[in-house]
Image (cartoon, rainbow, N blue to C red; front, side, top):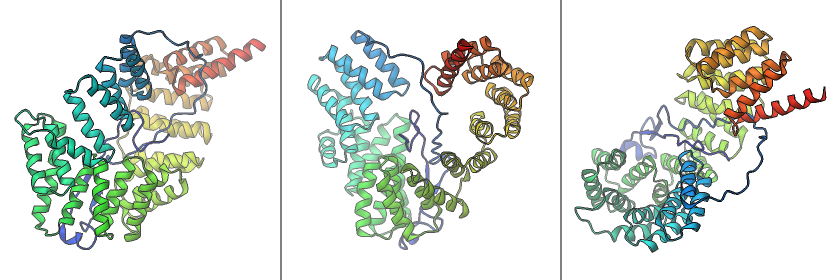
Length: 486
């Protein structure tokens, strides 16, 4: 399933927001707009792997592992981003040792990361049944209630904490957020300032500063309307990734005043981050109806339609954003390149990829997709070679650069140059599966079957569960079949 964030690695979102009270009175927060998108915001590369083919591995029989082995296996999966697999191992560990806290704690954390908040809460309750004073779990329960938008339960739990010198700064922070949500702003500021003083966590400090900045901005504008402050607080919630709080508060704001373009954008942004794309689209459509020329709205509409698989609408809104001067352009071209590729509009796709290379200081991986398109879809290995030569020029120490150049020479039928560059790639990085695969393909075109089989096998062993490994397995089996029948 496509995600607004990349699957195993979180994309960092940054919003640079400026505002002014006078323009808020007109329905937006600045002449330039309430939102401006920083260079890395919503980069959302949505890079897709090459087509995958079935692997040659057979399903292994169920392992009879001990509690400790299950926990270690779960930790391995968790550390590598395979959260569902991790949860499965922790659950099996819990079945083996049902009176131990650790597996339930890890299930809580894993399900929280998976956004399975009901399951996270169930495991938290199990932990507290085993250890009623487990402080970290009590803190997690507070966060879970917030994620479930059960703010009343969250506040009740937060209020049960007595403020002492030993109070965790995180608890003070969330108590402050909940008071801000309930528009008890004087108390909210007091709690946030206390959290800032007590904290020794740079990440918490940063988030606390974001929320306090909302209050400072309100004071600076000398605005009288509390509604304006509520919108600033909602913006802060978005910036610290408390999207459920942002949605709750923005709904109240927009009920009172429905002509706030940026309120609808902020609401759409929160829904996008929660992967509730239809709700996001509804909010962003409302923002667009209020101001169809605003490029931020156009860009986010492109995102929403893309995630809903409305490719044509997504392309239209992204193109409109570019026409109207959206910055940074590179993030739009990345999306357009992927969308055109999915639509099999390969000429337009590769043109967008080349625009990305022109506009950004891309790493060598950015050359892979356009080279692939030129070779396999447009049948223009000469242009692929030109791009690969640029990659070598810009990244002369990168094995992938030489792999791409060798791959291009295969398409041009220049076997000697292909082999030389592929071997150069393997000198720089002996475990580069793609170079082994391409070398196998080269050997196969030269009827050097055993060398080809050896290279395909090496590629598979290096990338057994990946796209290159799957391709290598298929090529190996097909070559083995054809050679055995000849």
